[in-house]
Length: 146
Image (cartoon, rainbow, N blue to C red; front, side, top):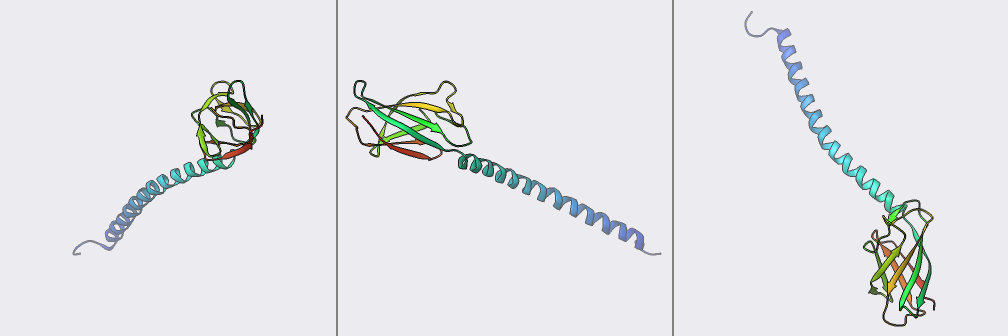
């Protein structure tokens, strides 16, 4: 018998095929594993944003202090950070600083609960529009009462 026998040829070919399949599997599982992690994170982030809702219940101008007192309620199923750094207030589309958010620490507004937001203003703003936004871009508006 000359060369390699037929049985050894088949065993060598099978070993090469198994090695190639194992290499392809490890490469694809790593590639798709990373993609699946990215997709899962994006899905979690989207679900969180979609289940976050709030409503501004009142907006009153206090003539004595020159500040606007607004009350927002979390009407969604997701809690969100309602600290002054994470909220923005606009009076007639002009950014106005938020003095404080009365909710307690750590400023997490849970579903169904209220937060009192105090907004600074130097001018009379009766009957003007107050819009409060949260970091996800969600916003609600109310006409400021006196």
